[in-house]
Amino acid sequence: MKEIMAIIRPKQVGKTKDVLEKLGFPGISAVSVLGRGKQKGIASEISCELPAELTHKSGGMKYVPKRLVSLVVPDADVDLVVKSIIKVNCTGQVGDGRVFVCPVDNAIRVRTNEEGDSAIK
Image (cartoon, rainbow, N blue to C red; front, side):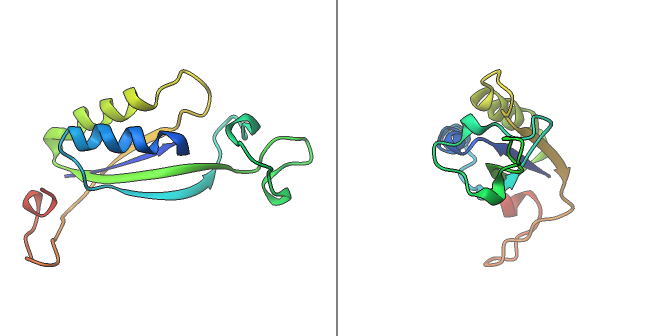
């Protein structure tokens, strides 16, 4: 099993959720996060007034609002899921995000005590 974590633009969460659901992976976690990549913030990503604590004196941004989408999938499905997340989120512009793939030792469904792949299906 692998955990796939994708940091994406907030406006792409719906499309990402839809494509994952069509692939048979409806169970995801998504949280609002703040961060930045090498670009050090893109003010045009934001469609509202920025609080002072998020901006640099130079006019750039300290942090950019993003979404962290996470799901655990069987090893056999990792490539399909990663490629699908990239396809739906790639605009070719700075700030498209990152995808991380991490090993998962075990998963346990609390209600039934199922373990491993059967706990995530």
